[in-house]
Image 1 (cartoon, rainbow, N blue to C red):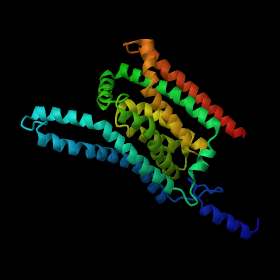
Image 2: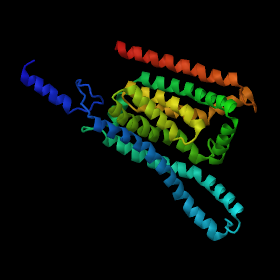
Image 3: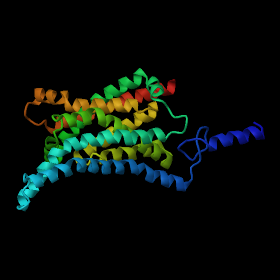
Image 4: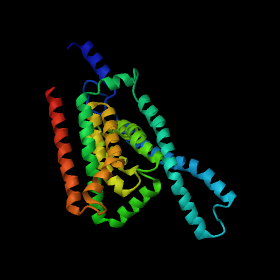
Length: 316
């Protein structure tokens, strides 16, 4: 290679959008200062998510609270009655607040993700066309397995921290999870879109630029995925599901398989899994061995499937 061609190649590398500091074709050298900046930028989407959740709840809560006080439905003369009435009002507003947040989240994080690409930006049609049948099947199978995994995790948690799980179940019941139409739409349809833009789209992308290594970035985005669920019970299994979602995003270079897997997990959790548990266990809570089996067996299935897709990709 002559000197002119060498300079041209180095110029192309320096202007690229790669995540590591090693100069390979299609990547850029990122300074330490920019890496620190990308790290803090990777934290912004989850923080903004929590802020938007609170804001959406307040949008619903404040008008109802003002009306309840003016109409006399909320007794402000007695502190105990007021506190209980206020908590009931918050519970009644939660489902609509969550629904509104997810709609806002899709637009905010979806637009941010789209603008994070350099021109020419990828189109939706091109993204859908490159989603293979293998990616869809892997996402569906992993989604079903991880639904069992998440419920098995709750069973194990219930054995170790029964009070924590009991509080979580009460919270889900108050929020109308699996019953209220707003929470069903939000969790099954909206969350798989907005949360994938947020975690596997933005946070993972910025974290890769910061650390230069996918596995570190994947752990960070999975951890933050657990944090935005704002409770320990969901947060623990969400972390492990987040690791799988991050792997799919990296493996297929697309968020569509992630959205499909996320949809399958949430849809299964709000529909047929409860009926299956009722048929198998009735009103009894499954014991620890059952919970451990529901954690271990799906884990083995998912790891074997992901390992197979990796080998297929290496052989292609």
